[in-house]
Image (cartoon, rainbow over all chains, first blue to last red; front, top):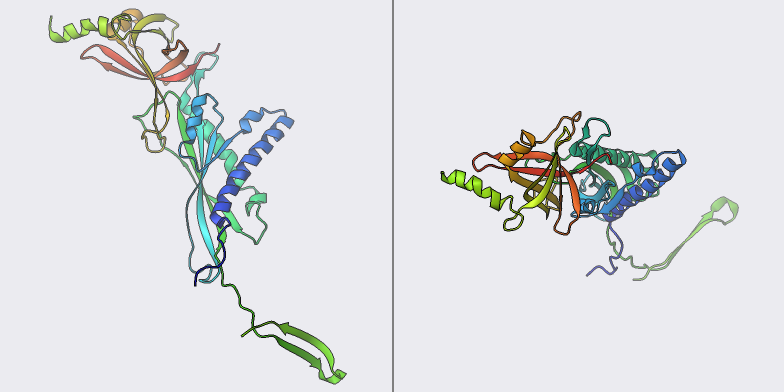
Length: 223
Length: 129
């Protein structure tokens, strides 16, 4: 007997993936507004957010050095101790937030220089700082999903900087820092469509009060 | 004249001749401000580079190759990468095939002392102006 309901909604891991990217994008805009109100340069809080991009740093070639953040789903697992075989399982998923910084070698205005590779690392670190602070903010404990609905918790478990290959020296130095975000969330699946049983009427009467009706329950059923 | 010396002398045509060879005007500014307008080979190509694995992905690779003897006679030393942030770098400028000029600094130098060519790996550079 096949499944009789259409599978037409996103799984939990898809919703979490999209939500992480949405939060980072919206909060970057919010931080820029706060920076402008505080008299700071809002560009220092600007991030370009991508989702499941294969080559996100390609956009640095257009000359814009705003850090680029790429959110992508890595892996998840569902321990048997957290869930049941019928309707609901708790998954622990890892979503990578890769923060790319592009540096610019330049004259320091004095007697020296600012190296491009150092500049790219600091840009990537700055982007990673913003992303970690946003995702670990208290208001995003459940990634803005209603408590008890989809997401149980989120946790930035790792922060890793990609090593720079000595053999590779591009004209535009780019380096990345990865935040591994662990999210515990629910997954459900299509369930049995219940059948209606024979109708049963149950009346519970209070003996001492001359048949005062305490409770009445109707059950619909068919054979 | 030995074969290697002939090869070095031929660099005047293969490397430094802008009419019959592949020579292209390249301006180099030393950290002390000395400017040399030379002719050599320049390159600015898109390349696939993965910052994670070092494999090709997407980016730009820029380089210049010049005759060692010409560099020495112009600057008294070979241009090189300067890592010290308290010093100015060696700055290189050349145009692409469309005439658009780009400014670079040297981040790696690879002298071929067999044939007398020095190749430089370049990164984009902004001057104070």
